[in-house]
Image (cartoon, rainbow, N blue to C red; front, side, top):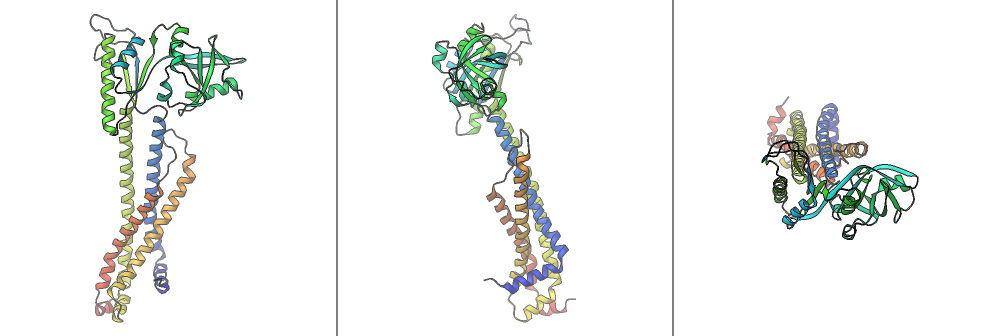
Length: 414
């Protein structure tokens, strides 16, 4: 039942000590505010890192080659390791049960691509159909390279949205011919990529066509494949790491490379990197929670202190109340109501201010690794209620002490 006299009494008591009440409320509000900001930036870091991984498949293994740095089985260092179609086929067959998507690539950097009077230099990649899913590329319209294109060595191309804008402007490019180093290719699709404009400034053509047109024979530049994910993330990471090591060993064996030569065959595993980075994000989140909670604890201690002071100052008043028949529970309720009011009001103020600041400042942050800092409102509100509960406990001790005071002792208090 709402007791207006009780609330008038609470406001009168708090107004008598404006500075003390303000500082106590400020410490509580600051605790919630700091916690909200820390959790918001923790989420922003997580969003930023996830957006980086979304540019390509998270469970991706990439293989590329370099120059040998060690003598091995009579072969001198300094040999460039050139992968072939055969290398890809053997790895594909050996690990087919664990492979989700796969492709080999033959790339040309700075290829001259032109359409009518528009010309530019872009990357051209000879790829297989699965590369669309490995790159997380979506078709804006048209289609991607398919197996028939590879089998027939078709001169077709899939271009990125930015490349399309550069060469075709507002014109529909489908079924139009572009020239790549003077060789005509028919545009069959336009793709968009979560990696942004950099990834969309390129063209994909069938791998077999790129090898034939650019006189590459059966040479390939890279091997990419994704590992089938299991429900258990740690198991998926272990499988991916084991496959990475096995593929590296297989290729070194095929090309007679020393097992401890780290430059000739290089294998990059994004899933292992993802585990390390997500582990770091979890650590950052735990540190932020730790700092935020202890800031809140400082505010709760402040509430306890002000309640102790209030009880001390109102000892004689409490004695008079008890002498007039006030029950211990009414004394406890009076003190707790003040503690709950201060904690709730200050906590909600800190919460609203923190959320508002994130809404205003968050969209203005331009960073690859901090995106859309935000806080789950339910988590933030739960933190406020936990704060109120802690503030209630902090106020209960002085309230219980006040309820135990004997009237005669309280009336003698000066």
